[in-house]
Length: 582
Image (tube, rainbow, N blue to C red; front, side, top):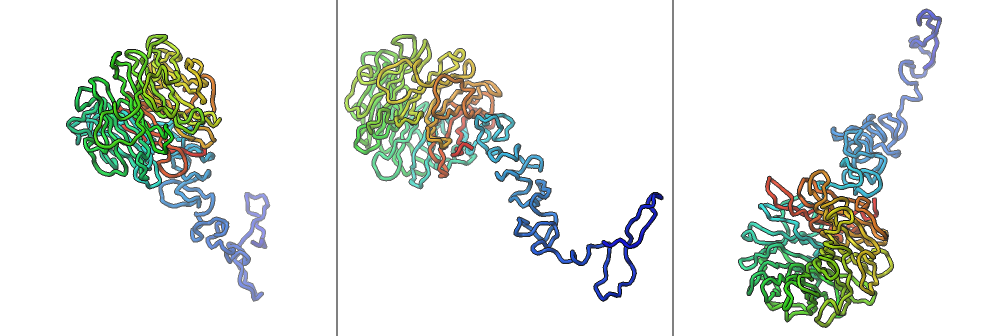
């Protein structure tokens, strides 16, 4: 404005001020109003109609409202994106979540890896904004599937199923002790990828239900690979507590994909039965890849109660020819049996991957009550492919022996993938009663391939010990795939007895690959903690493959003692991996 008339009026100090110029202007130009911007400001700048200082080309997302421009104050709740960052509220880090300061849920708006959907890595940050650094509550799972009846024990077992419906997404199998539509008998549930719903397990994409002669008890589940090479992954369900001819002789069922709706297991594509009472065929099952080199998927079945001359020495059966109809497991495959009475070989079974680089997949068999050196020190046996002859594990396998009394090594076993990145697959063995970190704290051991000779697990290249007594770490173990996309496969360790916010809420630990030596599980890269007291998260774990098609490895686990609506019905949780570790 132009200042023409002095005003000695300000507190008598002789200061001047500008008064409006109200005299007539005879210049022929438009009159000036010194209370408003001069004529050079009367037209809005190009592209900035609302005069907020931001043109449309500079990021103004509403040029008709001067309160809307990049960086404007933006509080959550009015449904308006005043700051032009794509959401209601301030999102300085561009992760799609509004900051807490603007009324949102992002607890660190300077770091895009931190938000309510973040993956809580061991980086000193509360990546998922749950108030706990480097831990992830199961309440934040991408998918949660809960049981509907008392003692259903949903999540008693869980496994990667492969691509059952051939849609390009991996699928998931969840085992339960009881299903209301199976008369309370066991069941397995197929969750098609991405498996990210929050629902009752009865809403699964398919159910495999126990029938009148299939009560099954505690079911085992696994993907079987594409055993008949039709392009669809097949599934295995073990029911050790049943038996057509003898009490707890056990049965295992092969169900071919694709599958939808309900199928009673009495109508499975193939049934393999135990012959002798208490053999418990089907206590464990696993797809093994191609063990014999015929380009066809094989599988292995545990029978920990088997014993013709020594009760309970246990056995595992390798099935290399696709079965059909009903038959005895004794005539269906190669039998590998334990060393002594009560070893319970076959308590846990798994593929070992290709540990020696010969192009054939190998086998891993757990015998947690093996006591050759110490009482229930336990053992895991590695059997190299092609494995064409039946015989004793003492003669046919490399033995990984538990380190101490009552460690129960071999309670759980799994391939660790290529944990150290040397081109050979590695194995992980759980010893839930190992007391390195306190009585029954538990330990998981990773042994690097190639595995050429028997060892004590004291000499394993990596061992991860439970945080506290009675954690039972190693009750479940699994290869996780390459969660952080660094070229090394990672592993999961379940500790269902861990006390976090309550007694036995349980925990699942993610250990990133390429580590050696002894570490406590409190140093794990991520920890998934049970959301309620006593739910026993980590009673089962699995690497789930890529459930949602984003190229990242996902994971899943069970909490068989989860309580919903006041009853103990169990739950299964799905977490989608971040891929790049962020």
